[in-house]
Length: 147
Image 1 (cartoon, helix red, strand yellow):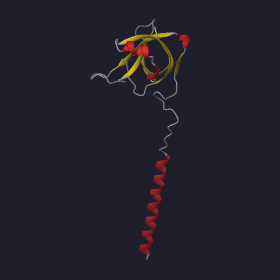
Image 2 (cartoon, rainbow, N blue to C red; image 1 turned 60 degrees about the vertical axis):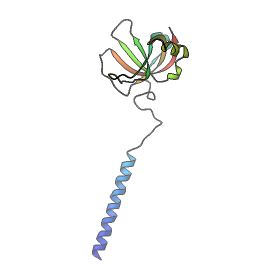
Image 3 (cartoon, rainbow, N blue to C red; image 1 turned 135 degrees about the horizontal axis):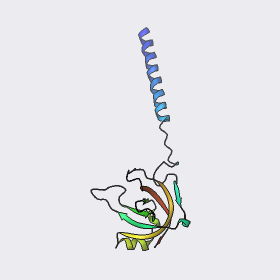
Image 4 (cartoon, rainbow, N blue to C red; image 1 turned 90 degrees about the vertical axis):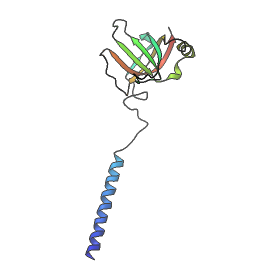
């Protein structure tokens, strides 16, 4: 009888521990898809390029090569500061559908097109360490026109 009671108590303890750890595990694994992450197209805006900045740059389509697979098969906007030829901002476009057909048609015949643009900048998820004056960001275009 004593053995039966001991086995029953051990079984209750085991079930209690398993239940406790299961609750603990699942309560710490909350996933909130509504809140933005700290990088990528759905993350918080880091900087806004306003229309008053009147930035001009180039847009191109980056295809994947064997030697480079960093954010490939995406449109890139590149801006070089006129006062600093080494200061280059590479911005990977989040909203491809915002690019006009005029620009897309030219990109079918040329590797890059000069544009005037505005947008909202966000952090990239895949960090790339380059020269200090070269940055990589995600951009949601708010205005784009041929230059």
